[in-house]
Length: 470
Image (cartoon, rainbow, N blue to C red):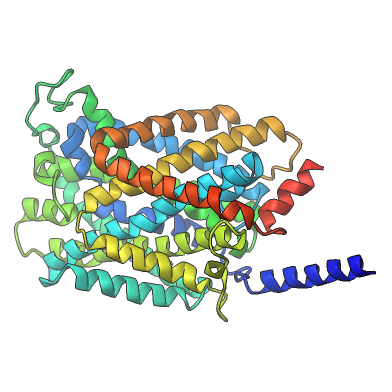
């Protein structure tokens, strides 16, 4: 009798625990997911990618971009399969949790968290540069306004936040199209190769920094696509996960690949690769180089280009809050971080990383913050692709409403390229890479010393793993 009563009390406690940690079901359709995937990334078209020109020249950046696009496309196919198998807010963490157990899930989730917590700080720096160019005001004031305003909007709830994001992203896409049309008549292939040729091995006008420049450009090529893998984080708020998640991931990836190649060709081809390699606002500077100062075209792209930066900033707040929500709900991180408000938004999961990101943005080092975000991203990519391979081999009978074209061959290609990208970050700046690695190690120690003893039973990931182990 006592055992039965204790079981009932535990069930009631569990129900009460999860009742306080609910997201808003059915708030998102496939079109909003495509918008979400594009908005995560679109800031990379407006600033950040061009630092790759300084690392590898135009040829090095072009090769790196093609290779990275292949990696992300293969990864999108693989993650589409896993997201329809396990549609929870944990995304990559959930996949690794089922494939490799609690430690594998935690290692993946915290790597993603590093990526998503630091990327908005880099974007805030670029927003500051655009505002400085447009209004003469930048720096910490702009960073603070961004974080305060957009965290506040996210606290209003997912459906409202994502609809606002979709509108902002659409405006940003218009700015990119205007830029592309404005640059096309002035394209000159010689401008692509105007960076001075070094004495490095393999150096030429196509690869002015030599073969090593291709590798060094990889982290900045990743900036063209960084965070598109966050689409599955909306799984618990999607109307039809089986249909909508693959459409959202693959659709947004194809749009982003087209924009990346057009901007890389036409931006450098019209204005010159050397002129853009260290710019904080490369699209604006490209238009000024071609059309002159104070033209309506440069002013338009500068003003509307802020929408692109804001779209990514806005949507990655959504991504980090859902990742923290899932990790906290499972007990990996402090459980208070997964409490949701009356709008079904995870309050502290939105606010706490925002405060940390604001403090990081005060460094003003957008290029270094990119490297830190890429470190977390590439580690998570390796673990997520290993998860796909493991689940294919150890759980071939699991329902897969969507199947990856090419199966484990596709995820293996992404795995190898992601492993190369991990090393590329170390080559560009070992100090920044090691600092980020130390942050990651700190998360691992927290798990080993504390959170593994306080994991919560009954989370979607754990239930999925338990049922399918039977």
